[in-house]
Structures are given as C-alpha cells and as structure tokens.
Length: 301
Image 1 (spheres, rainbow, N blue to C red):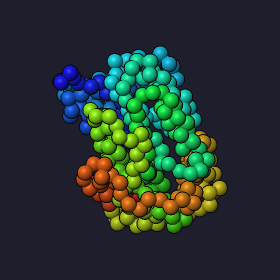
Image 2 (tube, rainbow, N blue to C red):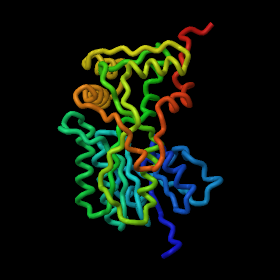
Image 3 (tube, rainbow, N blue to C red):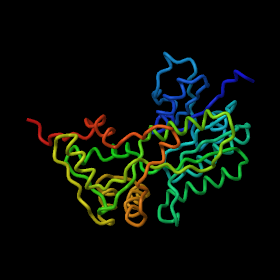
Image 4 (cartoon, rainbow, N blue to C red):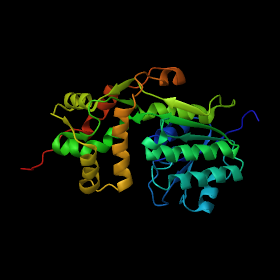
C-alpha cells in the first residue's frame, strides 16, 4: 500500500531518549502511540496541536495491559527504565509483539562489554537481546555509550556544594547526546527496507574525564566546580546512605566508574556515519543546560 501509515508504539516515551523520539515522529506521517506507566502521568507532548499522536497506559508487569498497548502496531521502540525487573518487563513487550504480529522492534540496549559480568545491568540487556533473537521479529538493538544528559543526575551536589563525586580516577568516559541516539532510532523505526544490522554501537565525539568535566562546568556556569575522586566503597556508601539510592542502583553507578578504568572507552564518534551529519558536542549541551548546574547559595539572607 503506497500511502500506508505505520503505527509506531513508543515504550519509555517520557524519558531522555523516548521524548525526543516522540518529538521527531509526530513531524512524520506515521501514527504514534506513546505508552505511559501511569494513567495519571502528564502527557509529555500535548495532544492539542497534533493529529497523529495518542497515549495509552500500561503496567508492564501485567501481561494483558502490555498486550493491549501493542495491538495494531507495526513497529515498537522498546525502552523501559533501568530496574531489576527490566528483563521481565521487556520480555512481556516482546511476547506481546510476537502475539500481535508486530513487524519490527528497535530496542535501546547497553554498550557491548566483555565480560558482561563487569556490569550487572548489561547482563540484563544481553538476556533481553537473546529473547529478541529467539522471537523471530526483525529487530535492532542500539548500544550507546553514556548520555550527556546523564550529568543532570549530578545537579544536586554540583549546585549545592560545587562538587562532583566519583570513583573513575582520571579515566575518560565517552558521551553521546541522547538526541543523536533518538534520531538514529527514528531512522530505523521509519525505514521501509529490511534492517541491515541487529546491533549498532553508538559513540559520541569525545571521551572526557571527570576532572575535565569539572573544568567545563566551572567555565560555563562561572562558578567553581571540583571533582573529588573517592574509593568505590566510599562512593557506594555515599550513594546508598546519603543519596538514599537503592542498593542495585548504587552498585550500578560504581560498576560504571570501575568499568571506565578497566576498559578503554571509544574516542571517536560513530553517529556521523549513521546520521550523515556532525554529532552534537558536550560543550554545546553544557551551554544550553548551564542553568541546571549553576551553584545555589546554601544560606538565604
């Protein structure tokens, strides 16, 4: 059918990658369905001025709700929040897609590391990728390096104390803008020809140390920001006891810092070949996001 409009279902439509995917897809002629975890969740994009966007809600642990979200879909973007039940949730989506004849799944995965045991969350993703391979559905898993936007999780200690805490020593980490990853995902979701690859590794233009990031944040905010390297055990205790993160998440953050030391990060960009344009830069991201990182006075007069 020459004028057929694909229906594309977006799991994770409120997130760092999912939201820019929505923003891009509604400019196309496809039909877009965002999946919300909570029916009370505010719509990430208003329905007022769009004619091809709708939302449904689904508890990802309830198979019927997941199946209802996948009905009459051609293609699915699969992204659920990092969580110990991520394998269960994403397997539910894959099974529902298979049941209702979904033709293609594009999944946001994790970087390819060996051995996978170095990062527990990466092991979850490898298991989910195995489910995709066994499903018979055409698929592509995107394996991006760290998102530039992940720095927004550090805003509390930066704004309050002018400090960045980590256990990466002087190891560089590669960063890619989540919006570049979203553009790659959209290309694959809309592509009318068969997918050439099942796995795509995505790296950004620079690998940057935390010391370098502190200097860049100091410059862009015009306030003094310092990186303090601490031991892995101290970082874990700080995240768990002071930041009140769940144990699995504190452990994940520590594992990522240790990984940067153990395994060299990519130093070259891969997005240009995938998008046929230059990548977004960390300095540009920091410039547009500088208000998020500006120091706040501890005392109010």
